[in-house]
Image (cartoon, rainbow, N blue to C red):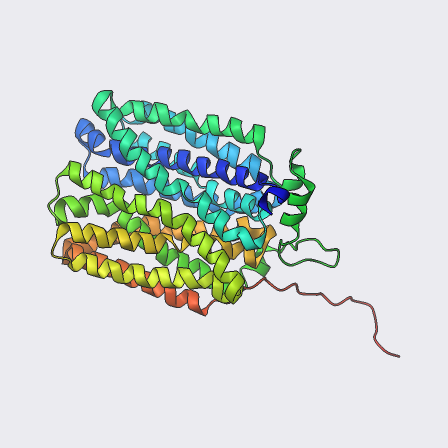
Length: 431
């Protein structure tokens, strides 16, 4: 069946996986170089913390406009401009690193460029796949996130040890323009614009694209119509809770293993990769399961089933990981927690396509904006809890956020936003 339909849409998804991988190589490069920079320039932890915060502030600012612009004018212009922007300022990072103020500004602009990627790619996915494949497509796309983190750790450490920290930024900055050239050559905003897509695949995609108007076209909603739906906000707030735990682990896991568990820095670095290796499997698996469950139980139950279960089980695993007496068991449970948490993402990011496929970028833009607030708050709150109560309580808080997210998502109804038919004025009914 697949061979008869064609698989052009999966080539598009593969290019988006590459986009996320390159983006995370550019993003995580500062984390690998951070200790060297702090030692070389004598920065305090607070000063270097400003660099991370600056990135997330820039990242949050472009989320909402990028989603709206992608839905309205097409994602190619948005994502290529953003990619070239973050690539340029990644390349400039070594030049501006001597002064903390210039590095803060540079990382903020890197964040501005990278902030467009998530909503723009979601807008692309919503147009390139039918609803029944939305979870699989989104889950596969997001494989680039853990893949980028793992590659950054492996390649970054090698480059620092054998060359210097500046090489990381120069090399990773080249990846964005390379991807942009690939996308401009082979990618398109919509399948009907692609010269080599088969008619069968085009019809297959367009036959399952959400609510239709009287002319049979997918409906586009205003921002007011979208964000007046309570269930949309339920999904967004639940995603914030997920992101809190994700960023807690992303920013604090190496330190937790080194300080809280007594690992060496080298061992901590290698063990930190384990949860992300697990995530490379669970991101696409979660998408496949979300599609399967939605066909078996309907969109409302099916799209929520694995996100809810993943958040609850992931939260519980984090509690046991914090209390584990054996360090190896602790990392096993934390990796299990990461796997359960990331299995939610195919479901989470297919939900906007169910709500409104032509406005998926706008909804994911709000996902990203609110979720980035977790990226800003989780490292700070975790540090305060660690200072006051210890690492275990910080992990307990993360677990509570995951379970809270599951409860909130349960209250949301995952179904297409209804088309409100406006009454015609000036027409009388009856005699």
